[in-house]
Length: 178
Image (cartoon, rainbow, N blue to C red):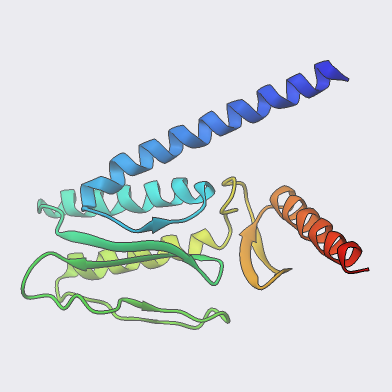
């Protein structure tokens, strides 16, 4: 039994180190945009790296310096939200995304240039993709709305683990109340 526990511990440690590497890689890319305010699960770092790489490639094709300032990266309604504005006086740094739980949303497409329109489409594409990636581990996931008050995008394994913890908490509260 102890060998099995040790093997599980080693597997967990490898997974943890892998996620830390992904986080570090993402932060290096993310810092290119002068970012602050990033609050998402490590499973979405791959999504964010893809989003940032695609934006960078669009600017490189246009032979222009990146003029995006990232305001905030977060989870909202179980999807990634990437809030940004352009670092120039002629662009409005207003709200770029207003989302809803039903998937209906309004996206202000800031900037008049074709490049800025392309960037808005890139961001929208990756935000949509995040709804199929577990925010905890990066495996394929789906929207889950029966785990407390939150809606989350999780794979089956992460969902089962979180659901089990919630059930244990509920059971403990019931036992404590009796």
